[in-house]
Every structure is written in structure tokens, then in C-alpha cells.
Length: 199
Image (cartoon, rainbow, N blue to C red; front, side, top):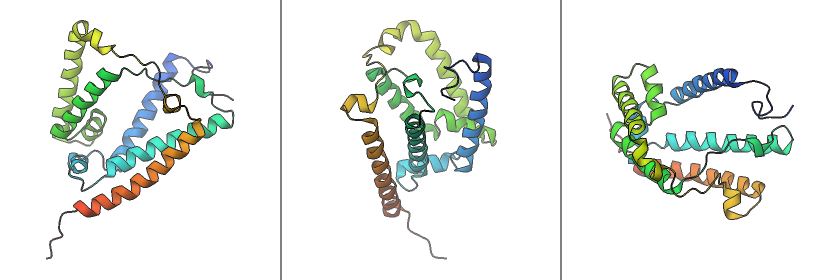
């Protein structure tokens, strides 16, 4: 059987929403189990004392990348049919900076705020209310900012396309980068760890 299943018509829009909901619940569960529903743990990455967010998210990226690569190699996934969001360089850079600023100030990103709400964190409710308000304001202002939103269109860009290297070489490079990143993250955590208090 080939995938993506939706592209081959094995289920429709209604089932895809159910699948997305189940995957979202699973993703949220594992985020919470990794401790990423805690604003203290999330903001610790900016102090370089706990880089769990970096390690968890990089692990998820590498796992998904390896899974897609090998399933494509085995002929089970047609990677050309996997949806890629178009790249709009300047608006996405601006959006990333705004997201990062909100992350530093509020202690959550939109996804982790939902995870924290599910565990009863009161500050996360306030953050999530801000997310909802931001969505509303963005929608109301879209007619004015639409030209910027679609500026610097680069199409559906991938790293292999950008640097003109085969997928396998890029996959190997990212895996090596991840291994180096994990080792470096451990070193940074030890370097910036707060001094232990002797009782």
C-alpha cells in the first residue's frame, strides 16, 4: 500500500480531521510526558540550563525525517505527494521573531500552552487567551497585511533543492548535526548549570 493515504483517496476530509485530532492528542501527551507543559522548563532553554526542548524537538524532526526517507526508499510513501508549506521568507522570519518574543515573555509556545492548559496551569489559560486574541486581530487585519503575508514567495522549498544535494546526503548530514547538537547541548547544560547548594 502506498502513502500518503489521503492523497490516494483512502479516506476523505472527515476522516482526516479525526486522524489529525488523534495525532494531536498523542503529540500533546508526549509533550506533557517530556515536561514541556511547564513554563519553567520551557524558559530554562533561554538560560541554557535545560535544553530539553531542543533535544525533544530535534529528536522528533530527525525521527520523522528518517521515517519518511526510508518509507520512500522502500516504496511505501510517495514523498512527492507529501504536502510542503510554501516558503515566504520575510513574513515567516517576522512571524518567527514574534513567536520567539512571545515564547520568552509568556513561557509557552502555542502548542505547549494547550498542553499546559490540559494539566490545569492557570498562566497557560492567560497565554492561550492571548493566542486566541492574536488570531482574531490577525484575521481582522489580514486585508491590510495580506501583501506582506505573501511577500518573498520561494515556493515549496526543501534543503536538498536549496543546496543541490541528494536527499540521502542531506539526511546523513542532519543526523550527524543532531548527534553533535545533543553532545553540545549536554556540555552547555553542564556549563550553565546553577551551582549546587550543599545542605
